[in-house]
Image (cartoon, rainbow, N blue to C red; front, side):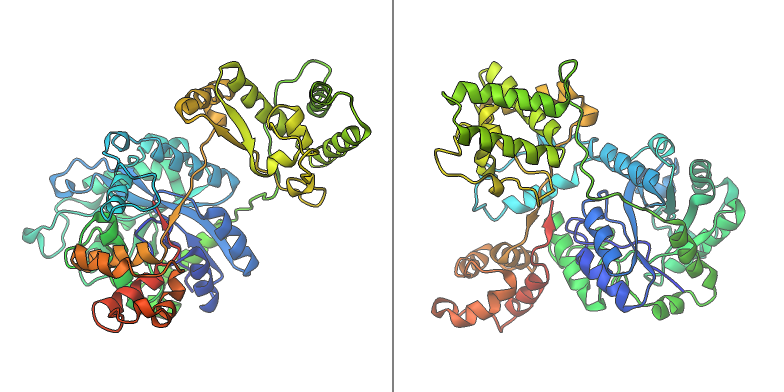
Length: 531
């Protein structure tokens, strides 16, 4: 038996092709008991993957493929400054440590701030070169994790490490190792990893090309010498064999190259698709124990995430007060300033809102937002709530909003109600000129270890997808512009139908190459996450 322990979704930005949902569906179709999601240097899809796999009756294995600094001081490995190690969470400790490691990796940014940012980066319509510049910028983001960091955050983690890529050596065609296996630079590196992970370390082997035979033989000798078991993976980047074209296309977009120039290691082999068990057995007919090791590893991964629980920071309140009693006091103090006299409808509305807030234990959240807004006011920084938060009398009385919901007939239930238990959004518009000043206050006041910025993803829609795919196919910029400017603003999945129906698009050469293939690739890449 076999389960895939090394799978990349499109959250391996501009590397993977499939969505997490599609990976789950493929694993279910092939009757696998578990499947892992191990995107490159990020865990952006970990939680939705976990919940959807559980719903599908599949055991989710949450992981990451993390670049780790390679300490091999050998001319033979001079092109391998880092090794992509697949790390899998065994439990909540492991999940927490994966989060720590990916954060450390992302905080290693050194070059991103110094890169030129396109003048129209914040505008809706970007120039043709802007996307490639942003993708190239993302490539410089972060730095490989150090072995010391791995050691500090190794608890609850299983590590699958491949042999580092070596420089091509024409003088060693037989694949022999010049030194004894336990004395080689690679062996020393793996010995260090074994000290960190002990029996949770595996040597990862893949059979993606004919030349992998040498690497597999070397891995087998190394594993035997050091007592490290081997495990098979397939470095999945797409679901079907024919999708290697799509994989090449997204990687060409990422690197700013062409399909004709993109080569390994920027792309992986055409064999890196989601193979069924029978195909994997054909790749390793003499070593079924390496495939069985995937089941052993999957059995050791039993992550249970506690989801749906709201965790709010403990705010500072006066002695003798709880968060709710203090919120009640501040709200009614604000009401007395804003409503003269305090009419029954004001008292009724404010009391009802506070009772709903207490029902969902959200008082600390309102106090936190109020504190940020009050600090902005003390500093003379314009800050005001917008959106559904203006429907609340509590936000009005706290000074978070400037809109009286009674005067404008706004319903509190649009913002929060007894049946809605998720934390409501209180969106604050802050003066852009001094936004960073207020962010610095938040980090300093609550501590950098308790504050995080929210990330967002760009996705490929029709015009952008067709434009970027056409560019990597080598279509001249002028022709790309003429074609894409005539495309309707529709989702990619509807683009062919729309082209055939709209008179202004009917003469577009959608049934001629290369546009026929370009549109096919673009449709497959719809709504894919971008860096």
